[in-house]
Length: 212
Ligand SMILES: C[S@@+](CC[C@H](N)C(=O)[O-])C[C@H]1O[C@@H](n2cnc3c(N)ncnc32)[C@H](O)[C@@H]1O
Image 1: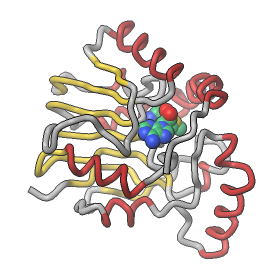
Image 2 (image 1 turned 180 degrees about the vertical axis):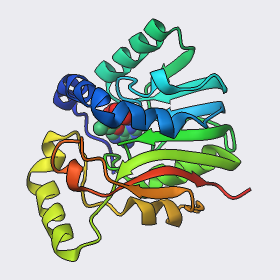
Image 3 (image 1 turned 135 degrees about the vertical axis):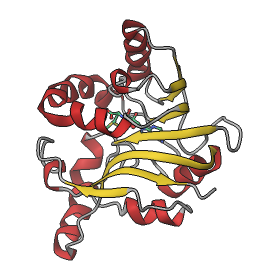
């Protein structure tokens, strides 16, 4: 399954997301990333909204982002912050890195949008060192069957098309487990400051570990 470019989404997302940072998302990002360190890969970095929150313990940051406009903005943000980050073109499904080469992989609001979630998670698992962590903040499908049916319809007729390939109906927690991660460190959250429909979606926040 190949990835379709979402240029229109890439135009409006940075501004739309900026308004959420002060309403709680920035704090959530800071909490999520506080314990990250070593060699880190961020997948689907967008315009670099996580960049201000990486702690000193990060010794190398590589970010992968398929949309050119977002990639340029992320590179610019790294420069503004004086952050030594390498921002590369690439997709989660084909990570151009060695096996067992990162201490942590970060995804925030990305696993909902990748074209092939199982493949993306297999790649993330492959590039993580044994004992390494997938650190993520992701919205997931409702556990309520009736709502889930509504989410599937909503994704198919509207949401995925206008929101850069995003899906509200993905059981991302199950997919992370299926990829071989220990998911004990992932906690359910609500992020009510996000716009509808994400404000009513359950979120998974925390880290999933690749067994040592
Ligand atoms: C909702 S945005 C989130 C951006 C950023 N992570 C954040 O927290 O603001 C989703 C991002 O996933 C990226 N994306 C979509 N499909 C991808 C794929 N297959 N591989 C890597 N990134 C992808 C998009 O280009 C976009 O930057």
